[in-house]
Length: 446
Image 1 (cartoon, one colour):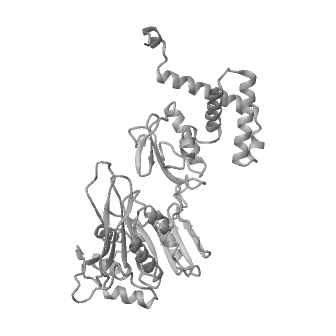
Image 2 (tube, helix red, strand yellow):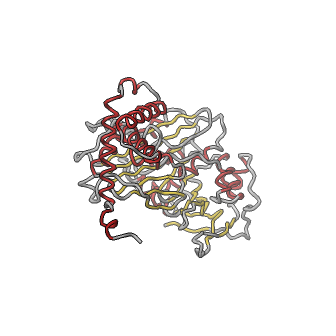
């Protein structure tokens, strides 16, 4: 049994953290005294880390303290991470299973793994240390964060998307969100993961090759960019593709791809290039297809006009919780353009531009699935009409908290089937073509 004396003598966790932080800071200062910064800057990152680890090992051997092998390794790792990387976040960035890192002040760090958010045993020694880490991150992309500029949204050179918001806007202290650069998945891999079934994969492949205009819809973290990237792999190699993104994530494998990325304003609030600017410019670049990572404002109108004026087979994503919501959101976003277009005319634009809505949903167990493929059958200024071609029917959440269900497939409208035939694509047998006696799974989206 632990004695009262030993319990009283045991250091408090905060005290231990402070001692650890002091030791790290002390040896970081000693390390900086012994290295040639000019020489270090000429080395690649991996060699730079190895050099710092060697120098710091010599310092500890020469000056102490006496540490076990594990303690010595841990100290060297902490000091070098602080000197070179992102401190306590460095191990999380090296963990391939972590897709998102969320820092809510110095004491609360969460990660997302396999679609589930969990708290991890990592914390910053102080708010000041967290701010130093944030400043180091934003400085790599020539940005700054302070009270006059308390929000930053940027992409790291290694591809991760970063969002920072600090007091006075954030009442919980400096908040940092790092979204990992997603791995490129093929449709076959998504099939193995259960994100869709074989019949829906076959239909989506036919729709992309036949140059239907697709909108991928879903909530945050539902896998829109992952699916968009996989669908883009079906575009024939000879076509000229232009991608437009807020933060470049798409990884197209075709040979003729031009990647465009928006640019935030500089410290003088000048030089901003928006998604809309890039979409407009892309129309002058003779694209066969345009892929917009996400429409979220007035650029939606330009994208719709591009889709309905000769750029068939274009793709985009939008934040929405259902196929009906996606159409409403497109209409609302298009109305945000400085070109004042009547709402009814915007409906006409959407009816003539959009062919397919692919809805993604993240389930309670963290899995991401295509839950509906909806075909837009309305024309002109009539109310939106959607025909469900395929859908996932989820069952009740089981005791093991795993979402299970089954896919249903419905006949395609004759107009869709004819367009596939003309493009040399077959209608997947699981769907078939609607006849006069077939009842289309059709609904209105008002």
